[in-house]
Each structure stands twice: as C-alpha cells, then as structure tokens.
Image 1: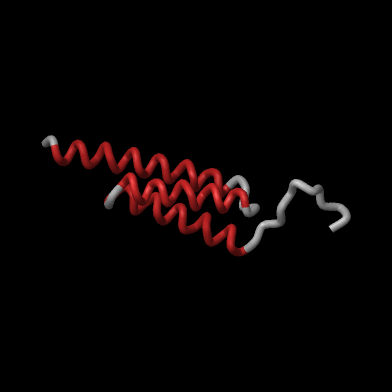
Image 2: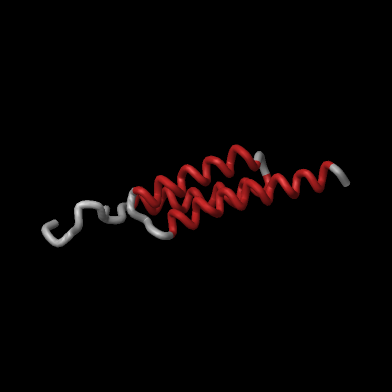
Length: 81
C-alpha cells in the first residue's frame, strides 16, 4: 500500500461485475425500454469505472448511452413505418 497513490483504487470483482452488467443492459436497451435500460447501463458503467475498472467502465457507460439512443431511433422508425 505504500507505493499506491491515494487517488488510485485497485480493481475489484464488484467493479468488473458492474461493468459487465452495464454492457448487458446497453444491449437490452436496444430492444426493450431504451431510456430505462440505457440509464441503468450508464449508471452501472460509471460505478464500475469509479470502483476501479478503468477504462472499460467508461466504455460501458458510453455503450449504455449509445444503446438507449439507438433503441429510441429503432423504435421511432418501427412506429412510423
């Protein structure tokens, strides 16, 4: 612990679980309730990144936003066709 800076957090298994779940919710957001599942994916990605799973947690958070936006675009296209 003497060599670790005070701001760095070691990656935990909880961080990896949050990150993986964020990616799963991002994919689900494309097909079902994009705002809800996209938001959950965003939050879990941020939690995973803060807990130490960087940069994958930030990628998962971005995937949550992309999944929500993509799901809303697809839903709009289906409803207006």
